[in-house]
Length: 562
Ligand SMILES: *Cc1c(COP(=O)(O)O)cnc(C)c1O
Image (cartoon, rainbow, N blue to C red; front, side, top):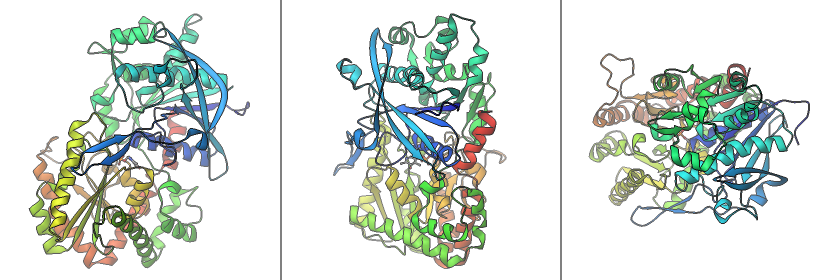
């Protein structure tokens, strides 16, 4: 139960990824939320997380013999992982009174401070069949379903916190899904003295994507029909773009502090929303979650305070090189075993291994390295064997993303048949536990989104914690973390280069990738181990010491919550 002496930060997110045992998350947004809450727990900050139960999860991914993605409901038992609380609140949705209860999870910080996370649940006797499904599927259903979910999260979340007795200092919206919390705060003040500025002082908004489709917009008639009188017309009028109700605008209008999730993303967001003051706080990842057990042992031995104080990771420069290499090699063996058990592809732990895992969707261009397969084979023939591990889900309605999965799998099958110097696998069902193995066990992390669409990216930061360098387009966090030949490699031009073209031909970037693999990266890996390990240490010392959720949490505290 809340500590009555304390005022809490309430952190609202449609998904919160804490552990693979609680499959209520989809990807980057949820993982970031989980990592931030874990750091707040480590730092003893009074915070409470609010999300939806997502009882059937996002989906379990299977791939059929033809390379088609099959989505299955996730089977898990909330009662085994979470504690049901007795409190219930009601939100009126489309004229129906929908009952909401919640389940609690405690995140135990390294300091034993506890951060509660509340999972809202409408699957309660007395609710209609439809309303009972409102907290079933993350990002499922149609836009009416999504809006109902967002009423549960935003309005239901505020009411649940009140019912549980929390006193809230700041409401933090992690993306627009939770923005209806502002109208609940507004409604409470509406009849008395209306003070928007006082509400703004309480609200923080973080935006995560420069892609228009990533911002929820609802048909106005539907919006009025479903929300009823929850949202005053004066508020609706201020939140319309292209004739639709825009959840991001709602969140922006009621927030004093707004941020993007990397410096470049802050710039891009200011261009999208020129009338707002928008800051940036670059994402980070939770060190204890994403560091492999092998590297944990080294850090425990040489940098005792690294978990609570990841800045001390900079001193990894004095850790002997063979210890770094051995830790990596152990993590790599585990990953290669997993690959061979799952696929029988005959991967080998001594071969250069590239990891490429993320949501499959066109702008992330997972097929870039397969742009010219003959060229890729020539590179391997000249400088040595190449193994590539792909993973990632496509949203069930992202047909172009699903086609990319099929394309990668088809190319992989053909190339593996030749039994040559290039081998490729696609691993099913990318989740926290697979991600942990991949970011630690690959030799290099590949990320090649189309600029400027990658808000931040975080998996390359997880790799850095394990001494794994990244090769990536200069977008998102990589514009801040990239030092050529020191922390990894760039792909394509820098946005400040003269004549920079925002939308370069894919072939130029693919050529850049093949050229760097052939001329510098793979020869260093096979031929200059000493230099390679120096790069690994720099990944940790320069990037993991900064791109972690501890630094991010401190910036939210000082910049957003003060
Ligand atoms: C880290 C992570 C993501 C997000 O990775 P990005 O590089 O930000 O795209 C997605 N899914 C899982 C399972 C992850 O661990």
